Amino acid sequence: MLFKSKKFAVLGLALAAVVATAGISLAYWAASVSGNNTNASGTVQIGAGHAVTTTVVVSDESGTASLVPAGRAVGAEVESVTLNFVVDFNSTAEAANGTLGHLTVTATSVTVGTHTDDAITSYVHIALPAVADIYADGSTVTASPVITLGEPTLADYASVAGKTIVVTFHFVVAIA
Image (spheres, one colour):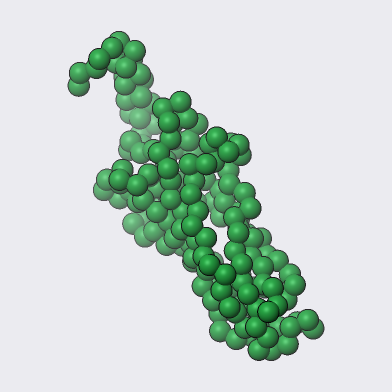
């Protein structure tokens, strides 16, 4: 491989050494999902006026596939992870059986490795599901946030490559 300067040659060799010694495939992120499956499931039960918070460690959904930025997937690597949360709205004194509610899902925090600052966590993109109608003690609703990654700058690469991604989701049902 030809490099335009010694600076890039040294950087290239250092990067190759890190990849070789760590025994990982070259990927921009090493957050993993179950085998080649890009879906993970969980169950959330909510009562009226109550909120549920759950934290997902993306690499805990894991096996062998690495989550990488769009256009960078090779072999078992994936460009997105879909988390499927089955939500059940339980009746309470405030919401009798059949009461209509609106389910909202938000991402309240993102951590990449030990970084919680926006400069690093801004590479994690989360497409949240739209507000959904849900009925107390009725059928469940599946909320499916999708996690993708942006490509880090060269300066940020070491701060994100191979790090665990942790996302905290907040589920709440507002009575209609």
